[in-house]
Image (cartoon, rainbow, N blue to C red):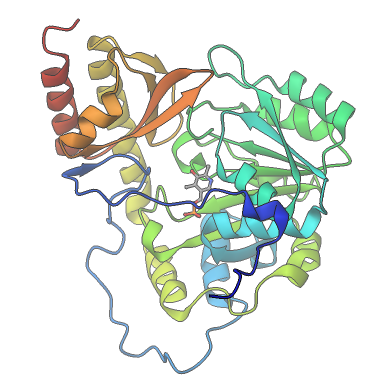
Length: 348
Ligand SMILES: *Cc1c(COP(=O)(O)O)cnc(C)c1O
């Protein structure tokens, strides 16, 4: 056999991102939502798979602009907001340039830095996982990152940064691109979308994967002032969104009546689940997303639940074990609670 052709050194050491595919009864590990917007299905017979899609996704961007209350010139769409974050980090950061964010936060930020050789700097959150914006501003003034990424609400901790704090960050940062990852902002109602025309260095990321319950179609958006969008259009992959995804997203956005009700349902269920977990001695952190971050009262909860067909996520931070549990339907949450009660048994 011939020698294997090597990847570039910077990426050879990376771990591939595998998602486990163990059989499950209840899936509460990826913050997916319910399929409520497209539950009636839709007809794709009229779509033409032989033709390239609209490279600029014009109709989809018009629909999104309507929903988000901005102009279509403020929007770029991609295969999930993950792809767009990768595109941005790759386009702005040369090898060795810095990207700053809090830790723990979305692990993909580090991954995308690794892919392009950017240096990821994680600013530690406080004991209770709150995010100290003054600390972030100080670190940024000192280290001059090319990009600052703030996940709001934060995944996995659920922490919500207030509008005042966001404004403080934007007022104090001039030389970095500020990306606000608002994948869960539909659940918290704190958004910086109204600030895109005030701060030229601001980019807001949104996605249909969470509150819209459409993770499978991979549609995300980058929202910024028209000048920035036009500027970064240079790095957009042509024809990036296929016709089926564009069509499904347009269909979903054509009837968004159910969205607010769905969000309110999830918030109610989140509160119920929070109280049930509290009764079971879980240490809990307030969450602005469709998930709850917690320190469980027993060891190996993640593995134990997995063996019983209930999937949640495990995080290890400073040698302590935490779990992130997606808020499911009433029935799913009940199965989770029943299984935990059985596991805990006489342990407490
Ligand atoms: C889920 C998620 C995303 C993006 O998801 P896509 O499906 O790629 O749109 C982005 N950021 C955070 C923090 C997320 O949790």
